Image (cartoon, rainbow over all chains, first blue to last red; front, side):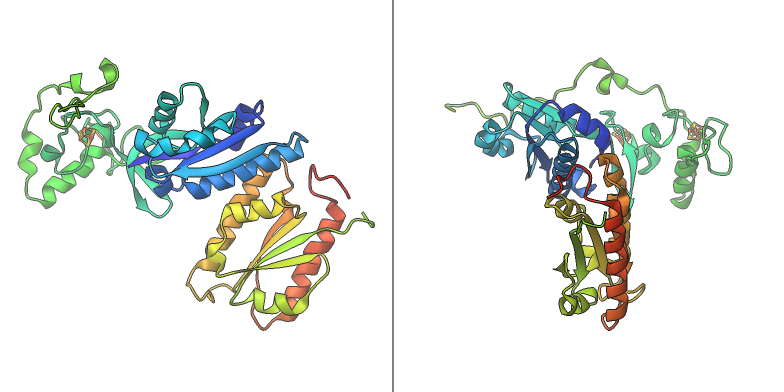
Length: 228
Length: 132
Ligand code: SF4
Ligand code: SF4
C-alpha cells in the first residue's frame, strides 16, 4: 500500500495560515491503514489547527471529514456541496488523492497535509518498510520475492556489489540497512535455488519505469464508450 | 494565580479510575468515562483542550492490570504523542498527564488530580485562552 506521514504540524499551520475556513479531508484507504491520513488523523489535525489558531488569536472554522478513496472521482463527488463552504482543502490523502481532488475541483485550492513516502507494508504495528518502487517490469520471479530494485540500495540486478558485510549494506551508517542481495541469497539458499546467483542478468528495461514522464495504462476492453 | 480556577478534564477508564472519579465530584474537574485507556484517541485529548480545558489527564489501570491487555500502555504512548503535538502547537505539554490508578484507590485518584489541579493553577489559563 501507499505509506505516508503527516507533514510536521508547523508546516501545516504555516501553509493554512491565510485561510479562515479549512476542510481537512482524510482518505480511508492506504493512508488510514498506515495511521497517517484517515478519519482519526483528519480529526486530530483539525483540532490541532483550531487550537493553534486560538492560541494565535486568529480563530478559524475547521472541519474534519474523510472519504473512502480520495483517488477516485466517484468517491470525491459526494463532497461537491461541502467544498463550497470552505476556502481550502487540506488533504491527508497521498499525492494521488490531492491531484484527483484538484482535477475534480479545479476552482478550489487543495493543499497536501501528508508526505507520500513509499510503497510498502507494515512489518509490525507501527513499523512500515518500503519494498516496491513500481518499476513497471517486475523481476520478483527471479529473486523469489525479494525486490532487488528496492531492497538493494544500488538497485543492482546482479548482486551483491562486494561491499556487503554480515548481511548489512555497505552504505549503512547510524541506521543499519539490510543488504538486499544477502536477503536474496538466503532466500534462494532456503529454496535450493542458489544456481540463480550464477546467472548474469542483462540490463533491465527501464523504459517502463518513471524516468520517461508519467506512465499511463489504457485498457480499451474496460473503457466505457457512451452509446455502445 | 490565586484567583484562577482551572478547568481539568480527566479521561477515566471505566474499569478503574472512573469508578473512583464518579464518587469524588471535585470542583473544576470533569471526569469523562472511557471504555479503556486504549480507546483514547489523540483528537479526544485535543478536543478537550479545544473545548476549554486548561488541563487534561488520562487515567487508566495499573501496569499489567488492563482488562484489555495493553490498553493502559497504549494510552500512555498516545499521551506522550499528544504532548509532542501540544509543543508544536505552542501549548505547554505539562498541561497533559497520564497516570495509572486502581479502582479501589480513591486516595490516589484524589491526590493525583489535586496535584495536577494545583499545577494548572500555578501555570494559569491555557495559552491563548481569554480569562473569564
Ligand atoms: S521488481 Fe519492480 S515491480 Fe517488482 S517489486 Fe521490485 S520495484 Fe516493484
Ligand atoms: S551491500 Fe548489498 S544492498 Fe548494499 S549496495 Fe551492495 S549489494 Fe546492494
